[in-house]
Image (cartoon, one colour):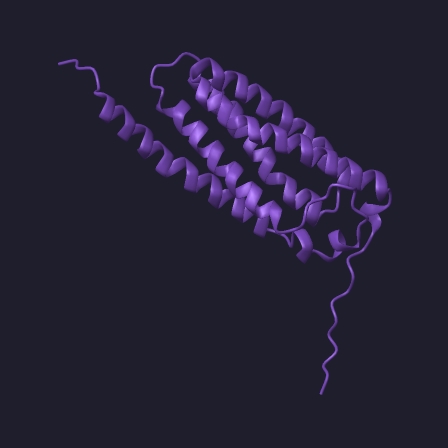
Length: 184
């Protein structure tokens, strides 16, 4: 027996996908962010000259959380589009660019590789742009949900490039030593 799913069944299927993809992307993003000291808690980063327009440190985890939620919903919409032509390729391209995304924090904050991190953002942007186009061929709303991520990648790329320009020796700059002095 072959029956067409009702609108309610389709919505429930999308909800099930989103209940997997959104927490998964948030968790992976959180783990990447916690893999090395990042943001204002990183002594190396604190010592760097920052370009004009660098937001306060608290904004980064908020922005990334919102972006991961939007991306999780976008990929859930595509995954829910059973039988859609190009669905597998779209999800694969998304996954590849997301793995690159997860590698950025350890590369920049952990390895202090500013130039490599700027190149990685460029690769992420290309991958995210391709994923967005492929998502748009499947479900337009999924592509629109990726637009804030594309904009943020452009902004993050400009910040990373600016940090590299202002700190040409950033890769050799050592983190300030933690104080081990005990005051008694």
